[in-house]
Amino acid sequence: MKQHKILFLIEIIEFVFISLILFLTLKILVPRDIHKFQLKYFIK
Image (cartoon, rainbow, N blue to C red; front, top):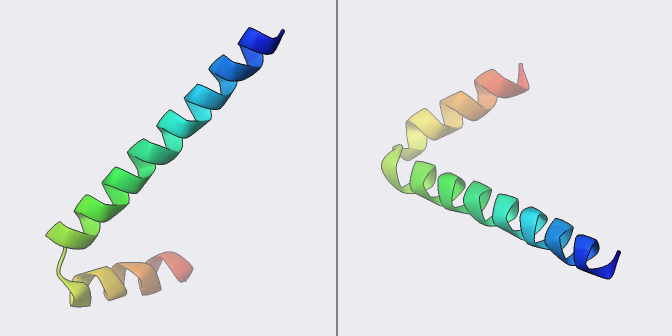
């Protein structure tokens, strides 16, 4: 049971880590104007 919880935690950490990397790469690659436009588009 304890080991299962640890595995679950590792999965969550991996997911957060991957999403963070994707977010950072998007921020670096995509120019700010386009990024703002995308955010506005998603909000609508």
